[in-house]
Image (tube, rainbow, N blue to C red):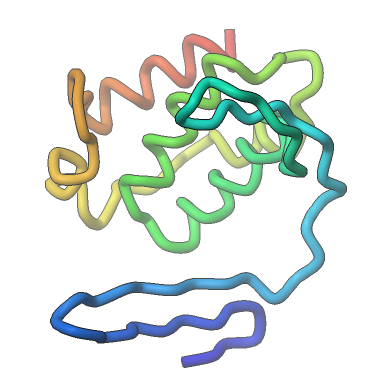
Length: 130
């Protein structure tokens, strides 16, 4: 399936379903980031800054209303530098909708505590809006 900005696909092979989603728009300028491999070595990859990724995930959450997006915002709010966050992000944080699939978060989180939506929202607001 393809929309104006996104391509979606479900691929089934040997009993395994892989969901694919790609955005058809020009992303923000990537920056070099250090990436630690399983063997402990590092390599540089290109990716978004925490602040730009925070904005991308908020836009995705407002559009899709999937708990995984706000879970990412929850963790990004810990490492994003408040002074580098765009004004648009602060606007996106106001009046966030309820997630459509909050119950799915327990299946997504591999280990550790699984916060509820209200807990994550309270912590995001504490970190970014105060």
